[in-house]
Length: 368
Image 1: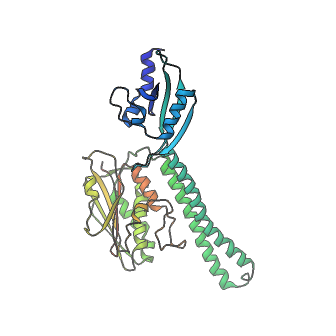
Image 2: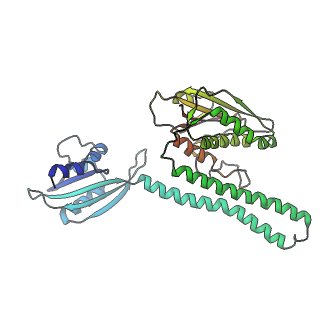
Image 3: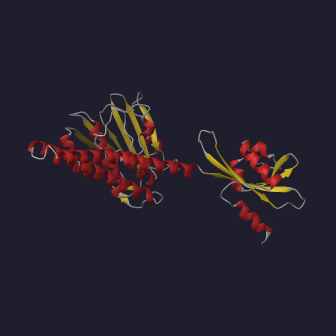
């Protein structure tokens, strides 16, 4: 094969790759591809390998390949703010034209793969835990109804009501898990439809009216979207419903949940803090041009607010704030679903909260 073609193939490899030459005790990088030059400061010449990579385990791998013709791998944490997990692979190469020993060093970023492994393990552990509590409750009540409560109509009616509630909780958990799985499956495919966010907010408020009345909370919707957003109406409805549902859940009796529809916003305007004394955090920020315009829904409650240490964990799956119990309504997946839907729409999610004065969540989507 033509040398230029081989050089081009080496250059387009996705992982950083370097050819190292053994020059006595010195090991020099004589060739590097584009990915390696992006990751490391290889500005020119033939730099010494230890001046570029200072990990002893990596240097030992390369030394073994050059001196003994051995192959090997080593992993390490980057220790930087991004906390990357990297793996180096060293393989011996045939000697160069001048007789020098050569080795190929490839560095692979395994951060996402390791993170996904941990997420899967955590997901299974949390899902099992969330299902175990209602299942244990159902099993206990069934045993009681088969025993001394068999002929007690009052106890039977009470226990059946609790069992129905636990069965509904499991059903909701399974439904949320399936919904999250479907969203993640298509998260890389941006939607293309046009959605009226104002209409979605009113439709959701109508659908939740029995829950709102039972909670003795008032929902006020203000603002009209001047333009539709680019999105999937069903998923935008899910976002709106989860945000309003959460606000109703944490509002006091006779409280007010305020739903505000905004349009023609830049990302900075969508994340503007309204209460100077409030805590705030961007839970998801869009990766887009500064001139992009967004349609936003801001949902505010009058609940206890959210503490500083809770803010980073709000969109974690199954996360429950301190003080909540297994009897607290909800599956702990609502905000995780919101985040993944907003991410699919290439939008953003922002929270602002003040202790004792409630919390506000803003989800914003690209404007059509």
